Image (tube, rainbow, N blue to C red; front, side, top):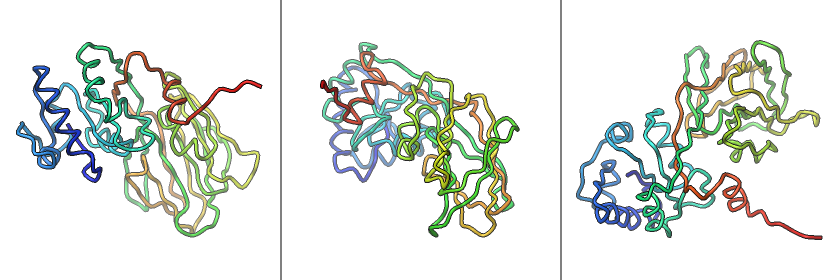
Length: 282
């Protein structure tokens, strides 16, 4: 078990989950900080990677940020992850903290589905330093604090695509299509689709729109702007600074994240619920 320490409800929910696990005849283990926060008397591990190596299932208490942190720090271990939402939208979480008893009961009955979600990785040179970033949602290249356009030359499979001028661009997986890319006007993509999306952020040319590419594609992004502060981020949690002339290669990672969701719930159910879609008749 891993928890978001700043969420007020974390302590009580983690303790409730531990009691439910014990009552079901199963053994709970936890990240050391989580165990101390909740006052658990169980085996502990110093970091998420060590915990994932020994656990059959990871319970993550928090929101999408907590899920992204766990996936990054477990480095695509393959251990299934079940998210318990303590936040707001929680696209990556499967059950609410208020329904944890019912959710775990469904889990014991095997009424859950495991989905393998692709990760994306970025490699290259940033200010003469080699980098390797891995993300579940997206790789974002964007301007810094100064409100001026940056210029990015983009190629797909060594074929020139276009030169974007704007605030930057997002390369997202299907999982990340409901995150930053959606805010920038990108499409919502079903997790089963074998594609990525390249979405410009506040593009200067109105004709620039999101482009859908095969997930087997290799994308090259070169920063043409010479003196503009430019940042590359993976899932908004890892950052590197780019200099003019730096080139980054983005491709599908060989690793995946394995996420659980209730068997009766579909991706479209989640989209309707989280985005508050409503039907109408005219």
